[in-house]
Amino acid sequence: MKRNFLYSCLIALASLGFVACDSDNDEQEAKVPNGAKPTQEFTFGDCEDEAHAEDAMKLNVDSWDGNTTMDFTSIEFFGDGHYLITTPLAPHAPERTVSVAREADGSTAIFKKHATKHLKTRATDNNGTMDIDNGKYQYGTYTRVNAHTYRLSDNSVIEFLNDVKEGRGEVTYTNRYGIQSNVYVNFATQDKTATPNRSLCRSWRMDSFEMWGYMNGAYMAHGKQWMENGRVHHNYKLSPSAKKWGIEEDDFFDPDTEYCHRVIFSPSGTYVCFYMDGDVDVACWEWRDQSNGIMHYWDPYDHEAEDDWSGDVTVRFKGKQMRIYEDYSETEDIMTIHTIVVNTLTAAN
Image (cartoon, rainbow, N blue to C red; front, side):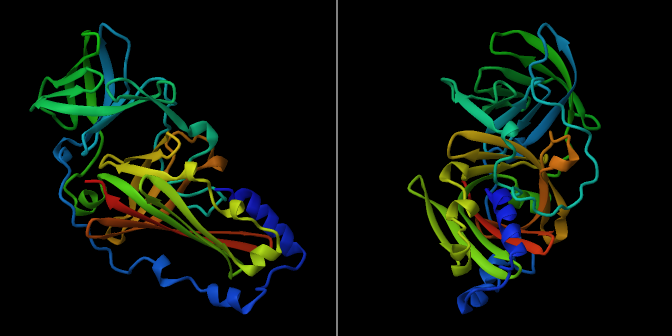
């Protein structure tokens, strides 16, 4: 979103004394609407398991022993029948440390694109396999041939050679050219059977993105983006105060190319966003407070603390629908910017 510019603009305005509501309408709208607040109780969804839910897993490479160079450092099978390969070209993710919830920095949002350097541009081959970010990732479909063998859409094959022991195993990987390698792998920590994970971990269709903006408690803007017949539609409204100060819709709201129309959550802590312009983003999630549906998300490849891209959100389910609530505040000098977001999604299958 374009809130970095907006924050600077509003703080400058506040220094000139424009810090109060300009109309009764602003005061009436300043109260956060009930629809923007999550319910107190965390209940679970009511969706059938995806066709490949039992196959969902992530394999991290311990060592590669074969006739080819390492083709991947990890491979993850999603419950909807897709896979995601991370190749050695991808930046090395630092060791995970205890995360801290952060305040909004003007760009933080769970389904919004990361900084420009993290955007993933995709290309599709004849088999529907996508090469993401010049070979850093590969995304495609897989077929379970038998209890031990998986065939990927690029015609490579992974076969388990032994039973998994203490989270480790050995597989034979045959690449698209028929060359085999023995690969020793470990399984990422996961709990597919936990009810919150069974509700969350699947492919979702983004129905709508809705946002409310406030400055020092005064209502500033409301906007909504939603999908209809394969197109993104918009409905934006600025308060009289925002209009008086020269704030424009583009200062609050992104064009439709920023819209995440589909997202996959995995039980191994990965989520993948697919945007309308063809970009793809790969990020991580974990339960901050599972009993209350509080989720933490972050960029696994962000090494710079001052550029950290992360946040906490509240998750709620109802039937086949999921809502993710975001609530961010930032205070600088005499200005407090409060942003509330509601993302509404429906199970893809």
